[in-house]
Length: 337
Image (cartoon, rainbow, N blue to C red; front, side, top):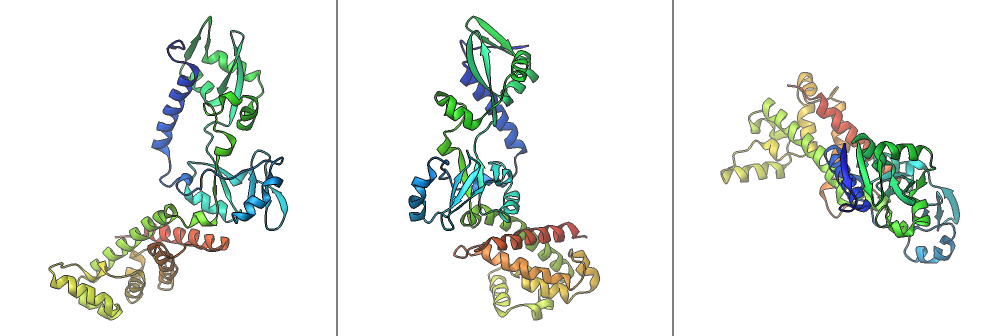
């Protein structure tokens, strides 16, 4: 049994220790590209009681939507209607950006909830009511922790028993009923959420994610081409003059690299299509026609590489991004020796 004396460690310290351990585990298991990389924070949000007075302010900022997550609604400032916020429209900060993209293809915006815990319980200890996050109760029970208070103590097992006899409180319940706990247990309502719109899809986080997979594809295909055509001059006929010029300039400067290091995806496409079927398959393609997939990958690659170009302008273009990622992964997985 592990004992924690709250004369030395108060309840907020215990909660911090729990969250700290939880966060470390989440860091180990977290995805490489979380939603928090691109969301705008804090999101401007309202309630059903306050949104009408705020409409003109949102319109002046060119904000199309007024989220009201506490009430599960949002208001469209351009069309003047209210609709429900779907449960799948709210994600946590660790949600992978790929999942964000999938959901954004169906919704006009995504809310990122920064509240660590979703449910809390009112537990009476020695005549006083304390709030315990559900996760902390499970943590104390699993690790056989006993919490010592002035004049009393409670074990994790007892916390579980109290929990089963209590009704859960949501984050918003805590914000309303225990305002003195806000900031310790939960964030204030106006700081709880971030928001992801089409503007945020064009941020660096998404481009970095795309760059990694497209650059890996380019690198692997270049290696294949060099192996199949070790003499750079043999594939000059598929190269642009500027590519040949850069290769020759590097060679004059003592950089004896294969020309594949200078090729773009369209040049690689031409080289692969001009090769025999066995090499096409080794490069990860089903056929020579399939090699034209590099056209659309190259288009997204150009949007990623040029900082002055937006990645998308309309929500329907998100499907293009998802498709390019799927195709790039398919090709990489099919590469063979």
